[in-house]
Image 1 (cartoon, rainbow, N blue to C red):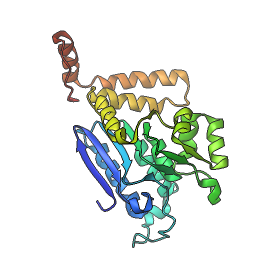
Image 2 (image 1 turned 180 degrees about the vertical axis):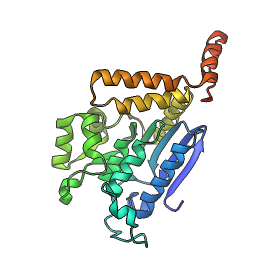
Image 3 (image 1 turned 45 degrees about the vertical axis):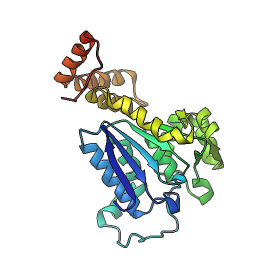
Length: 263
């Protein structure tokens, strides 16, 4: 791909935003390629976790305001012009709907829609170089790309209001205290830690992990009894891997590490 790196390492998809000269700002090409690779991950049963990161000094600085409309060289399609959530909504949806655990390795600045991209992932790892900034207010905008959904659920309403209404920058230490970052590590070990964590997840029964993610997403802000029904449905899905169920029992009895296949 032109602006995106993609490889699968031991069942872990590694997605690298590659516009380092623009701090990986989102132009039309990069947005389209994120959409494409999200679909690839969603459809590939061999992928059990995904890590998103950026090349160079930034994770993603948000929308590329220097590109201008039509910078991709093509006019928007009729369908895209009729889409009421726009590219910002599609970006959030693409990441949110990936069926396996997603980890953002925030290697630098994550601002605006780039911050939203990190928030859309299930977990965020960072280093002393990580920075977050909502940006929207200072550009005369209200939040988009899923930020108003993800941010208060991750750090709480009042803290989200603080960051959105002031548009102030948040360094790595504060991001970790607020809960924007789930792990704070040295910069030189950021990717190895992200890959190790993704590897831990991918070593577990894949149907159970996919089901667990689906239940977590469905059970935000719903009635208790509805949540319990979703859990029952999730359990029925998670146990549809007879070979993994047998492997779980066999490895326990044989006192060895299980090898799960999702079949």
